[in-house]
Image 1 (tube, rainbow, N blue to C red):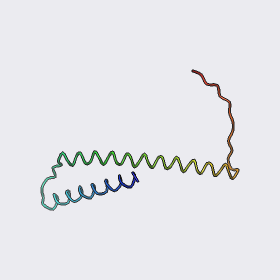
Image 2: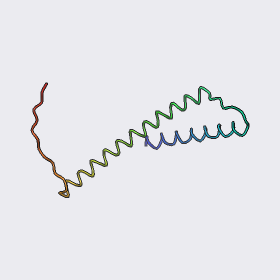
Image 3: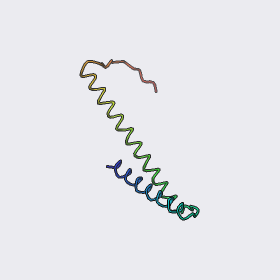
Image 4: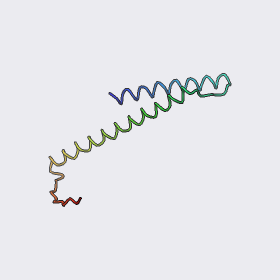
Amino acid sequence: MLTIYCSSLVKTNLISLQEQLELSMRNGTGFNPTQQLLTTINEDLEALESIYQCGLSQERISNDVLSLGRIQLGMSSLLLKCLQLIK
C-alpha cells in the first residue's frame, strides 16, 4: 500500500508541476519556484526512495522464492559449512 500511495503522490505532484511550467511558457513569464514547490519536490524524492526500497524488498523476496523452487526441483542444493566465529 505504501508503494501505491507514494507513487500516486509523486504522479499528482508532477502533473501539477507540469501544468505550472506549461502555464508559464504560454504566458511568456519566467518560472519562479516557490518554497512550497521545493518542499513538495523534496517530499516526492523521499516518496520515490520509499518506492525504490519497496522494489528492492520485492526483488529479494522473489529471488528467495525462486531459489526455494530450484531447491525443491533439485536444480540447486544447500551445502552445510562449519564456521568458526571469532570475536
